[in-house]
Image (cartoon, rainbow, N blue to C red; front, side, top):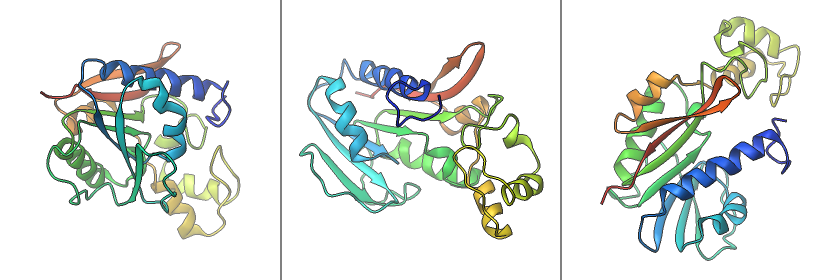
Length: 217
């Protein structure tokens, strides 16, 4: 259900619907459009670029080793998204970021990332899991993210949870626990004050948050 590598999983369906919303946001923009993807992969764009149905040039920024460019319209750069000084102000039409900001670090680092997004792009589409959703999406445990850090560290030293394997070393386990900081709706609007906040819903619950700002002319 939560495995986005499976095309028919619930996670994959949410991802497709999310990208369709992003594509609709770009319908009134001119060609070609320049897109900055923070935290993405070339493989993601290999699957999704045709859904845009328009000319686009994509720059993928990731801390992971860059992949050889096999798509002429996609380039990959290894950079820390908290410091995009490589790029000028308004260098891109739009920034797309999917489930990255919760992995950046504490609030001050999330603030730095949001500031760079707002600086380098004239519009943005930033998605993150909702801290108010009852099940933490990485460890797949209800209420995990509101459980004390010391208890989460203790548990992770003894068992695997969701996508997170067991980590016996106490320092490494604590780092893994603290490496994810989910954001609430009010925090997202604080980071992206010009945005419209879109809620992805699963039944009665808001599962994910998307900060959307249309491209400024």
